[in-house]
Length: 326
Image (cartoon, rainbow, N blue to C red; front, side, top):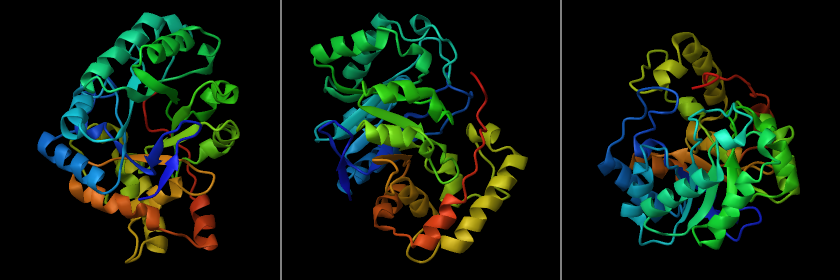
C-alpha cells in the first residue's frame, strides 16, 4: 500500500480508501427507495480484509442507513488505529444542494448535533475528518460552518474539516477552496468525469487542500464487469437505464480492449488513474466483499506508458445520470 499526507492535515492515509456507503445498506432518503443490498457479515469481512491489506482511511456518513455504516466500522475496527471521515447530512434532505439559505440546510446547532451523533456512533473516537455532505459557494460568507466547526474542534469531537462537492459540479466549490479555510474536498473524479482537473484540483493543490476522489468506478461501470444483459436489483436500475447502459458498456469495452491485460484489471486501471500526478491524494471505493478488497489494493502498483495515459485522458465523457434533485 502507498501512503500520503492528506493535504495540510497531519493525517497519513492509505491512497486507497474504503467507501462506507455500500456496507451501510445505502441511505433511502437520498435518491431512490431501493439502495445497496448489504450483508453485515460480508461487510465486516471486507473491513477487516481492507485493514489487513494496509487500508487505514475509511469514509462514511451519518446518513448511510441512519448511522449503521459508522457503527459497523466502530464494531469491526474500533480498537485499531484507523482514520475515519464522516459527513453531516443536509437538514432539508436535498442532494445536490439547492437552497442558497444555509440556515435552512446547515444551521449551526444542527451541524453540532449531527456531528455529536456520529461521534457517538463511532464509539466516542475523535472524528479525524468531518465533512458537510453537500456544498454551494453561496454559503461561503455564512458564519454557520465556521462557528460550528470551531465549537466541535474545541470540544474535541473533530480534528479536521472539509466538504463533499455536488455531483458532477466541481466549480460549485471554487470560492471555499480558494479561501484555504477547509482541509479537504471530496469530489467525483474518474476516467469519464475529469472535469475537476479544469479548475478545482489545481486550486486545491495550490492551497494544499486534501483531495478525496469518489465514484472512481462510475457506480460500477468502470469495473468492466457489466454486460448488455446486466440487470440491477438496487438503485442503479434507475441510473443505468437500458439506453444509458449500452452507451456506457460500449465506451468501457473500448478501454478494456486497449488496456486490460494479465497484469491489471479494469478496476485497477480506473482506480490508479485517479491517483496519478495532479490527481487525488486518496480514492475511496466501495468494497462489499473481500474479493473487491484484494483486487483494489493492488491498484497502486499499476503503471501506464505515456501513450496509454494520453489515451485515458481522451476518454473524458461528461454526463450526469443522477436526477437533478431529491
